[in-house]
Length: 291
Image (cartoon, rainbow, N blue to C red):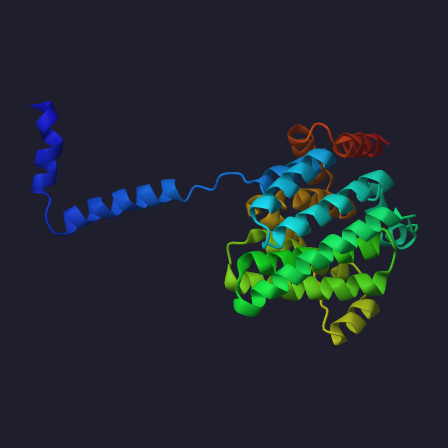
């Protein structure tokens, strides 16, 4: 008798009961069908965080061959160039950001001219492809994300390698504007919060007169809001979640929030064991705490 029970159960369902069962089955099928599998972009970005730059570039190049008109390919390659330069020069060491005076006194680095030219080439390619897509569809998700990332990468390079603060703020403003358009088109693209989060936190950390001048120029900041946006990307982002966690750890160090900084660095060390930055910063925090 047991084998006949399902059919008898369905036969007895009518009206709302049957529609409810059908709706549940369709929902389960849709959830299964829309499960996102890691792409070459996902794998490549994870390799960047683990300092496997050649492996990341292979993933990006392979993905780009399959998606030649998608601007996310060249912008991912540009991110690989920038991350490799950050690693070579040591610019993500958290002690550079412990307080405003240390950040202001940071040195201008000697950039690799070949890497600089390669970065510019990939960013230009990404922006050209993105603008072509946006001319046909102003709400194209990948195009808006590529523009957000491209201007954000330009801002990072200008600020952290070339020490061109005004140029960096110009690009930061552009990245925030692109991020706003992206979130209006797709509120679930949580990677977009990284651009505005960085902007709000850095500008919110500046002296009051500087913040006032920037606000007059259309650039505003708030440290708490910036941290909240970084937390959103760290928790729900796709490509940029680990980078958001790195930036959050730096922010927590600046805000003297050692427990949260330690927790993030420890999780990053576990997830990306080939990146020595996290272990070094954990040791430095422990050393500072023992004084």
